[in-house]
Image (cartoon, rainbow, N blue to C red):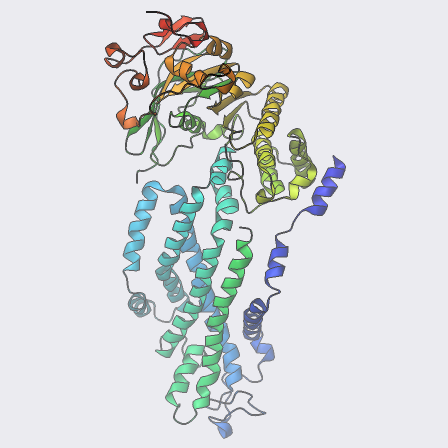
Length: 628
C-alpha cells in the first residue's frame, strides 16, 4: 500500500499546470503584462513617479512629450505621467470595489437561488427583474447627491446596481449544474451544501462568471471615468483618469496630445480586462415551478419485522402537479439482506429509491406513510442525516455521477476526509484502500472520469458509496450500461462486499437474470403498486401475479428451444390514467369486472409470499394457467 501511495503522489495531476499552459500563450501574456505594469505603477507611484502629482512647471504648460516630461504636461504644468500613475490608484481601487461588490452580491445570490430553487428562486427572479428596470446612471446620481464625496459608498452602490445582470447569469448556470447527476451523488454521499457549492458547483460556473466579471471590471473603470469627467469623482487636486480626460477635453484645441495618454491607458485597461477574462475562462473550462415541499409522512403504525433494517409502510409519493406516482407501498429489508425491486420502466422503482435518500425533484414529496430505518422513525429529520453514512446510492450512469472537474482521488478523498478525517497521508491511505477493495489499481486515483471505462467508473462509484461504511446500499440498475462480462464482475464485487461488510442491498432492476443470481427476496412493482413480493425462488417457480408471470415469460433463459418469447401487451399507463382497482387490469388476460371495481387487497397465499391479485389461484407452478 505504501508503494501505491508513492505512485499516487507522483502521478497526481496538478490543476496549476493547466493555468501555466494557458498563460504561455501570447494572448494571455499581453493583457496580463499590461495590467501588472498598470497596477504596479499605480501602487509604486510614490517611489517611481518623477514628480509630485500637484507639482507645477509654469515654464512648460501644455508641453508635449520631452526629456523632462515623457508624456508632457497639463494646463497647470503638472507632469502627465505622474498624474497617470497616481490617478491609477483611485481609478483601479474604485473598479476593485465595484468588482468585489458584484461578486459578493451577484454570485452569492445567483448561486443560492439556482441551487435552492423553490420560493427563494421566485422571489430572487422578481427582485432581479425590478432592479434591471432601474436606470443605473440616474440612480447613481441620486446616490451621489445623498452621500456627497464618499466615493467608496458610491462604488458599492454601483456594484449593487449592476450585480443583477451577473446574478441572473449565475442563477441560470447553477440551475443547469444542479441537475447534474454528480451533484445528486454528492448530496447522497452526505456532503454539506456549502461544500457541494464550493467544490462542485462554483468550478463549473466559473467560466461565465469570469467573463462577466472581466467585462464589469472594464465597465467600472469606464463609469468611474465618466463620473470624474462630469465632476462627481475625486475632487482636485487628486488626479483620476476621468478628471484628466475632462481637463484634456477643455484644451483640446490648444494641445490635442493631452487627451492621448489617459485615453489610451483607460482604453487598453478595458480591453486587457476583457482579453484576460477570456484566457482565464479557457483555463478553467478545461477542468471543466413548485417549491420543494418538506417531506411529510403520517405516523402510521409500523408492524415491520424486528430484524428489519429498513421498513416502509403505506408510502405515497407525489411529483409536481400533485401526480401520485407511488401509492400504498410497503417494503422491508433486513440486515445484510439483498432485496430486488423489479418492474418495467415507468413503474416507480427509481422514484422509490430516490425518496429513500430525499432526492425527489423539486415539488416532489412523500405525502403519506412511514419510513423507519434500523428502528428509528425518519419523519422528524428525514433521510438527509443518513446520506453517505447509513444509506448510500449507486446510480445506473456512473460517469455522470462523477464530477468531470476532479480526479478520482480528489472526489474519493473528499468523502474520506468528511467521514473519517485524519492527516493527508491517512486520507490517501484510506482512499487507495477503497480503490483496492473494489479491485482497482492505485494508478486510477490520478485519472479523470472521462479517462475511465464504464466498469472502472462503476467501481469508483461503489468505492465512493463505501466511504461512509453504509448499512444499506441502494443500487439503481448499476449494471444496465455494462456488457455481460463486466456486469458479472460488478455483481460479484457487490456480493463480496455485502458478505464482508454485512450491508444490505436494495437492487433496482428490470433484469430477472440478475435478480435470480444475486437477490434473496424481490418486490415486483407495477404502475406505482407492489403487486407481488416474496423469496426469489418462489417468484421464479410459482408467480402469484399475472404481471410477474409475464415478466418471467419474457426471459430468454426460461423459454423452451424453438418457441417464441411471450410479451405483455400494452404499456405501463401514465399515473393520470391508472385504473381504480388493479393497475394491471387493462393488460391482464385474467381481469374481470371485480378487478377494477375497488382497490385490490394484498393476499398472502403462502408464508412470506404476497400478491395483489384476485385471481392468483388460477396461476399454477411453472407459470402455467390453471383450468377454470
